[in-house]
Amino acid sequence: VLGLLVWTLIAGTEYFLYPAFGWVMFVAVFYWVLTVFFLIIYMTMTYTRIPQVPWTTVGLCFNGSAFILYLIAAIVDASSVTKDLDSHNYNSWAASSFFAFVVTSCYAGNTYFSFISWRSRTSQ
Image (cartoon, rainbow, N blue to C red; front, side, top):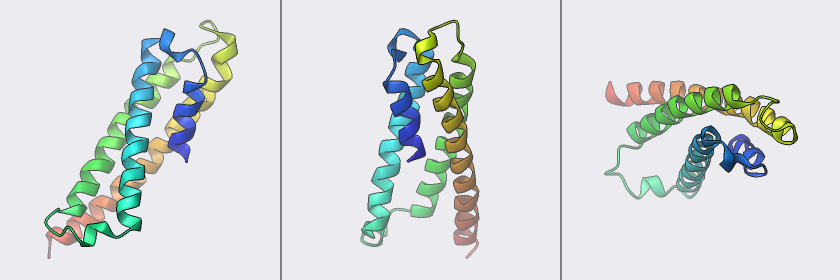
């Protein structure tokens, strides 16, 4: 839900005039779609039908990459928000920047728990 807020707050503005927001949109939409995809896989327990895939490693790689790219996107988002660009879009961009950092912290926590799970699986 928080990732959805990030890209909808930006998509409702004239973000295409500023290339930095294009990067933020790419990261936000890409990881939102992948997160929904993995949510469906876990909710339907499809992962139990595909035991060849190392799901703990996949989860660790996904969450780690999401954390790193979202951190970069959140920093780019926050540094691109100025009142000088367009005061009409300022509030949406500022809110998207806040939620981008919240999503980054969520992915950081999820990366930590994925690492703990991965480490316990590989030590067995």
